[in-house]
Image 1 (spheres, protein in one colour):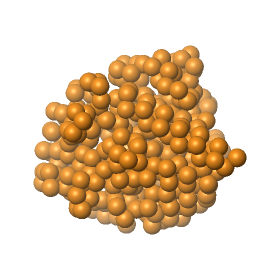
Image 2: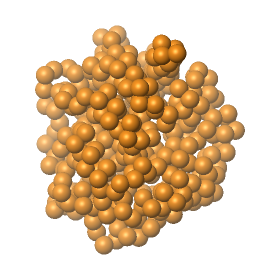
Image 3: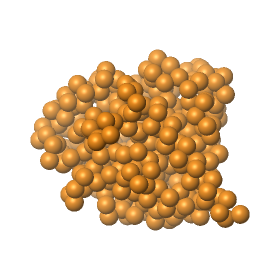
Length: 358
Ligand SMILES: [Mn+2]
């Protein structure tokens, strides 16, 4: 696939090098971000330029940013949101100046993604991340502590310590924010930024809630196709788009991921795809992440790639999380080997589907 990418956490914080990424066959894009700019602040041009140059010097492209996070004041709907929205617009303009085409973001209150196990042991000796509802602690602080103690010293995206330090305060601030209110605040945000995206040619790509269900009483606004149609209607524009994360959406067994792709790629609303597989452990929807192959998980990755092919997808795609295999140590979900295998598999499916249609 022409825009196959690999998520990278930067030379300071990722044990994987750009040279290693360059050697994964069929990989042209790095999906990156600035990790030292506080949420809500403007991303400075010099830092964007430096990242861009670093990636291009390694023979790769940087056209997708994951993520420019949304300040909680915007999600809560505080009066201070307007300044943060202005900053966000400046960041969009600065990214556009360096050829960025897509910004991935999410609108999840407090917790970004959530797992109950960062090292779930598989029978073959590898491990990956898992979510089991029964293991979810009643107290959010316990889950924060366990994620922090289990992350091999890496800061996991969305789990930045300075943010989680204020967890109690955050829960209080979100007390009045239900699903309806969160949607209202999201519309307010989109109405403000999408005209900037249109002028500067940058497409927003919202990531699904992961897992796609309410947790600790916090609202969730992107769980399924119904939610996507609501978000789409908030501000009609191809620049108001989605990241279709096959794993996140697939974590709800009633979501038909190939069908979601067919609907939203056809409408040109999905500029970015996260491809990963998950395996259900039981009928309650508990799951662990799995290798990308259809045979290893509960999702049919052939049907997913075929849906992309049939709808003429020409956007950006990356393997999402991978297992830790061959003794690799690193940031849970973001090792080199299993994600590289994922790319090779996805590219293999794509070649087969493409040639079959010639
Ligand atoms: Mn994802």
